[in-house]
Image (tube, one colour):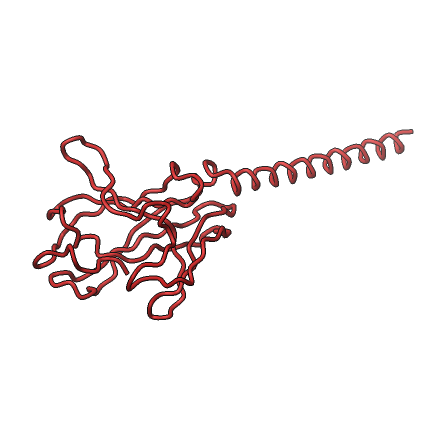
Length: 202
């Protein structure tokens, strides 16, 4: 009897472990689905950063352009909206929807400063992307990153030296209210002469 009781207890313990294991797997799968397909939850896994790219784009007085990067900093993949395109130089590229905000000293708030309207995202434009552009939804895997176009944002009229700017990335085109922002950066150079007619976007 003691031997049979011991075997019965071991069998029940194995069954309990198996049930717990399956429950954990199911919970993990549900969590993956929630974070992968739910925009608000998925945004919690994303971080944005910016960097400078040395070299101007033909605008006198400028020595660099700016680029923002969206990175999946979590352990689960996230579905994000991208634009796959071909440039006027016949190079393939991929970008995410983005804009730039400026810190308004009068209101102490971030205000929209520059960017394409959502309905214009991925649309062809002169000296930029060609008609071979498509909006797609792709997986952004853990530690994987996507970049924006590089822009000479400091060339825009209306800016002053020491203005504070930041990129705002919209990773889910169907949820324009959900954005991931970069840390701010400071305008430290301005074009020589007016830049209103110059190309500021790659």
